[in-house]
Length: 262
Image 1 (cartoon, rainbow, N blue to C red):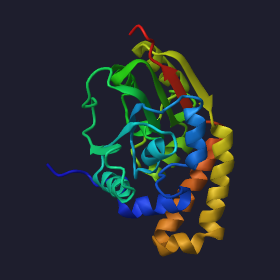
Image 2 (cartoon, rainbow, N blue to C red):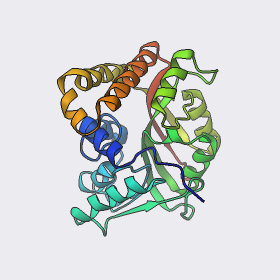
Image 3 (cartoon, rainbow, N blue to C red):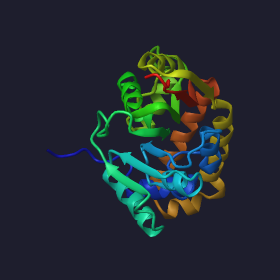
């Protein structure tokens, strides 16, 4: 069976890391990771990192937050290879496993992880309800799900502006509303479900990013891509800013806990 081309090949990884930082394929860097984790103590924890990408956060969960073991999973070959190389270079093979997995259920036993983490990757997963059930299943009682994702303000038909943006982005996004996420997590059995809207923050950041892409660092980005790629990227960013400004595109932080009696 021939696999479809990856959304995140080596050239795309290089581009996004130049924009968002080494090891990061989504915005915000270490500061956003810190906000997502909050006051949850990862020391001695076994952590699952869903959609580990090129591994910057996966490494940070060990080196900066003291996790005892982190398993980073992703569905694409290139990101897993880059993440594995990062782990090996830092000598963290005993602390971190990078695994390429197939879409669907997680290949782990019930109640295996203390914490499940994910940053801006669930947007690629259509079935949010099944994902919530799987996260609940693999968490130990009292364990935490901590993440962020790119959401849409409602579950009605997307606006023409959103459809235009999604067509330009072309990354297979399956955006859903905060209400749908909250309901899916609650129905799966989680308690203390809390979602925090990061729209205002990313609207301002995206405007700074498009300034870098179009003017300040245009040539640097073009040197690792092409003029045509840059023109399309800037067009995509401007379309994204449009739906950020209307609030339809609303990144959120997501936090919840598995009850001790489950």
